[in-house]
Length: 107
Image (cartoon, rainbow, N blue to C red; front, side, top):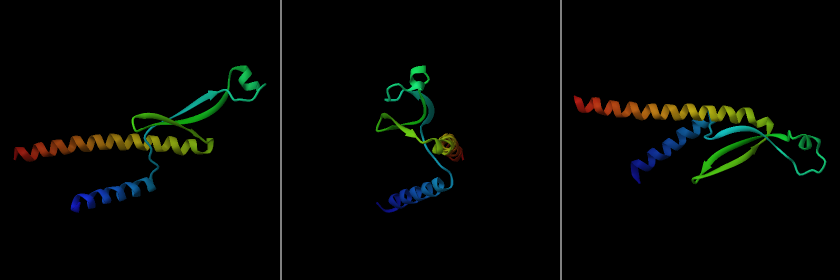
């Protein structure tokens, strides 16, 4: 593997360091309402249902969802926002790399 393996390890370490500083996630967070299984529940009978927060993400091409505890919802929303910023930065980095390669060829 040589140098390529070392670079991958370094990139993984850099990502772990970044993730330790800033929560990161790719997916979305949604607040929903759904009925419970209890008979005679007033909230469900009224049609409102129970509030819950869901984190959805893709894994192996399949859409997955996880229940998020209310006390964790804020941090997860921040992580998703940070993930979107990181995606934009990666896209810009790719564009900048192509432009710099073109400029180097022109010289």
